[in-house]
Length: 154
Image 1 (cartoon, rainbow, N blue to C red):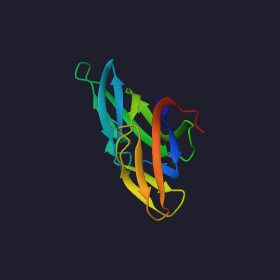
Image 2: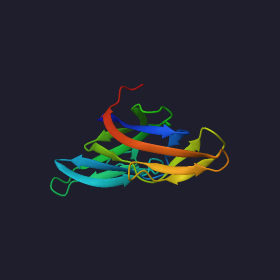
Image 3: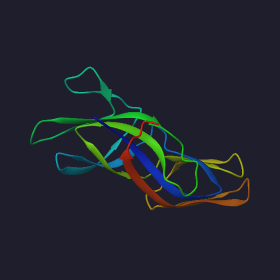
Image 4: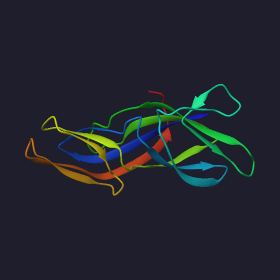
């Protein structure tokens, strides 16, 4: 078992509280027994772990060895710092590794200049821009980078 932190870094202009909700798809490249695969999971959805009383949010089976790997969601955090790598989610992995986080759609964003919010923001291209009519300002997320590291448990 290993706990992994999903981290993101971005340049924010007039943006605060970049959040990927727990009821939204989180996309990853995962690896199990040398095989990589692109998957998504929804942290708030639970399923039974095979041959166990526990629950997880993702199960992967190896066709060759008949083994199972699981991913369980531990917690999420909002991204609220500009230009620094910060953990946005922590997962417990058993028999399967998170290789890469793929930021896609589903992010929620708040403006620093007004009460305006945007849902289902798509970061697939690595940036996003919109106009906050209430504040008469542009809002931008750019230079999105991701990382996966062993959790320090903090």
